[in-house]
Image 1: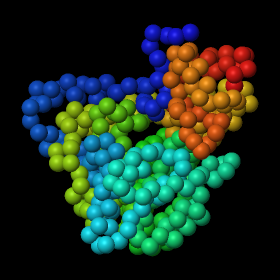
Image 2: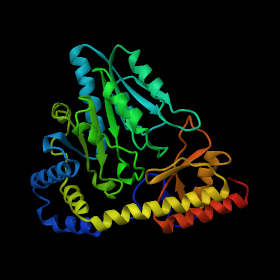
Image 3: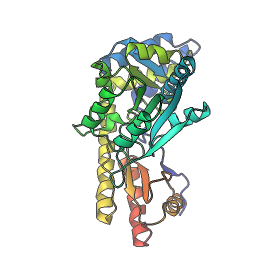
Image 4: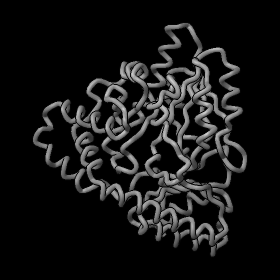
Length: 350
């Protein structure tokens, strides 16, 4: 059964849509769209600094956090070239691919370390071994919560690793989904920057998820003053657009919307977890706006069948087999998904 419009549950976008305040802020500034948004950009940096308890000089604004990821890779690559050292990027496998993509484009070797078996956690021992065996600069790109698993990393182990790493080991922590985390054991890398846990730590965040501004392309990095200055050298000049800046500011002011955004995601997560429990399908403990769950059968076939039913779910994430990543849309959207999933079980497909 093909619907006229596909239900997109594959890109971890926020189906709730932009807040009304953000939309109105954009409309209100259309008449100054011919001017550069220097004031709005400065205001956003100021607000981000205040929210995170850092100075404005600790903040590097990005055209989406994807630009912040790129600047870190470029900065360290330049550092390696100018000092005559080798450079590698080390990533868990699977994870979000942008650090790997940027590194590959620059000819930087990327080493992938598979997640642990069964629990699909970071393999601390092997990640560290890859860097310890390398005589050069290593950049660890680590999502917390991770994508596609939606799980968080053990805080005590993670913190101890970052604190004890040698000077040639750098950490890029991608916290795109941190605003969805409800587990009290979670500790943001921003706190580690504030207390000076490591000079080689950069945390990136985005307005694309909880704030529902994926199309506006607004992200940021937080690091110590020296590191922020170093990565700022690789940021595109005038990289902030007016609509994105004012929409981000308005959304940050819209507490009612932010509460609704989190609340509806948690509701959708609970709905999906309930049906997965009912069907006996395993899922990892989600702390994000998506859930990584088991499929009984071929995942590619499952993806194709869901599309035939008007639902687009996540792609395969090898080397993990038998799991699918599902974006948590609105409760109404998850009702449609649940109906389809139950029909798949009735036909013996899952």
